[in-house]
Structures are given as C-alpha cells and as structure tokens.
Amino acid sequence: MTSPSVDLGGVSSAAPARDLPSPTGHRPDRWSGALLDLDAYLARIGYEGPREPTLPVLRALQRAHTTGIPFENVHAALGRELPLDLPSVEARLVHGRRGGYCLEHAGLFAAAVERLGFHVTGLMGRISLGAAKVLPASHGLLAVRVPGEARTWLCDVGFGSGPLGPIELADGARAAYDGWRHRLERRPGTHGIDQWWLYQSAPGTEAVPGSWIDRLTFTLTAQYPVDYAVASHYVGSHPGSPFVRRLFVQRMTPALHHALDGLTHVTTRPDGTTTEREVVPDALDGTLREVFGLALAEEELRELAARRDTAPED
Image (cartoon, rainbow, N blue to C red; front, side):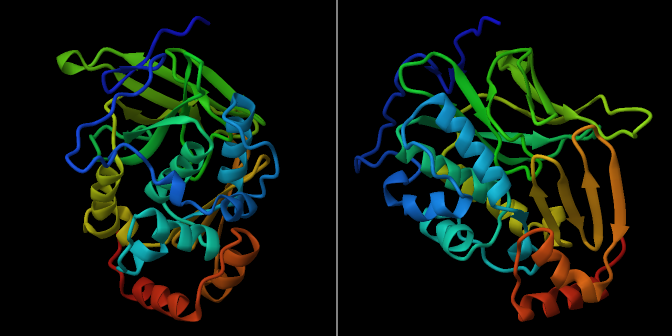
C-alpha cells in the first residue's frame, strides 16, 4: 500500500512541525516529555528494550503500555478531582501503579514517545461503537511519526482494548496483533475536512465469528494538552458522561480482554467470542486485584459500594 502524505493540522507528516506562536516561548504542542521519569515509566510497563525513535521501538512501547497499565475511572466514579498535568498523571499511573482513562493514557504515552525523539500530535475522537447518535469528541489518541520517515502511525493506547500496536494512518490500512483486528477508513467530511474511522473486530460466537464494528471517528485537527484537559473535565464530571455513574475497568492482554462494567465482568477473545459473569460485591476487591492488577484503597471500595447501592437504574 502506498501511503499518501497525511496532513496533521496543516503540517505534512513528511515535514517538521511548525512552532506555534507564544509570547513566552512556550510550545503548547509539547507533552512535557522532559519532565517524565522515563526509567520509572518504562519499568511500570515492563519495557527493557532500546530507547531510540524507531518503528520497532514504537510498536514495542505501545504493546507494553496497553498490556501494562489498566484502564479505570475510579476518580470520576467517585466524583474526585483528576488533574491532567504530567506530574499528576505520572504520580497516579506510574508511581501509584493505578490505571486511568483515555486522556491520562494518551498524555502519558505522548510524553514518553516525545522524550524518546518521536514527533507526536494529539488527536481527539468521537466514540461510536455502532451508535446512531453523535457523541462528544472526548477520546484522546495520537498520531506519531518516526524521524526521517514519511509515514504516520495512529496510536490509540487509552481505549482499554488495544490495539496492541500502532496502525499506519492511511486509508484502508489494516493491523492484526495477536489476532486482534483493526482497520482505518477515510471518508469525505463536511466543509472539506475528511473523517477517519477506526474499526475493530466485532464480538461473535464460536459458530459465527465477529466481523467489524466502528469504534470511533476522528479528524486530523491537532489537539494540545489544554484540549485534553477540557475534554477530561467533561468526561470526569459532566452528568451526561457514563464515567461518573459507575465503575469501568479494563485490562488488555494478547490472549484476552477483560472488561468490568459495574459488577459485570466480560471476557473477550481475539476471535470475538465472549463470556460474561456477575461479580458479587464482596468479591470486587479480589477481582480488581487478581484480574485487573488494580488495588483500590478500602475507602474507595466502600464509597463505590455506597454509590452503587444508591445509583438510579439506567
């Protein structure tokens, strides 16, 4: 497949990014990579490979990140403040060994790849998952380029269910990591702004394997850390956000994807087959620790239980 030059916020993927004007000299398109405790981050995700901006390194980093740090929304579900600056995210996800939702993951990964010398551009997507209605643009994902190469790679590290590696940002691009399938489609959009659609393999059964379902749509308009902070305010506090109503936790492995929605635990395999079980409240702590690698404080568990008991039915 021949990849066309991809325009990211008016900057060709084959050209260096333009400096954004700032009276203080601050670059608002940077992701604070210089502040990252790189050794601690790489230890957190279990990565011990080379530290250079190459495609094999990018692939290995995304695999390690998506399998090493779980997705969770405990702060939002408890109505607690969720600062999105890098030191705060690093304190939670790296040193505190907690998980996070998409904007935390994307910001942390952006800082890491920036620190290693990749060129990274923030993007914002709208989750669809087959829904007919238009949902807010609140999902953070990244476009990453290897220095000296023309191709751009889509890295979606914060969805909770992979992909385990980057996907080339090109119309019709497909990727299959350990049987987990994804593809990209580019469509003409309104006002001359193309829309990109990311598809994932859909759930099925052993008799009828899954096909495709649209995961999200996005444009190539560049987003900056301040945009992620605004989106996080909606995701973490707006009453219309599902993340403020109940617990969501996910863990991705090459062989299985685990998802906990409230007390419903769904396990999905690469072929799309799923199993589902209800977790009894007293077993929640053990399930979070053993399945998702997530240890909550007793106070958090008590508050989650209290909110679950008083929450209105959907």
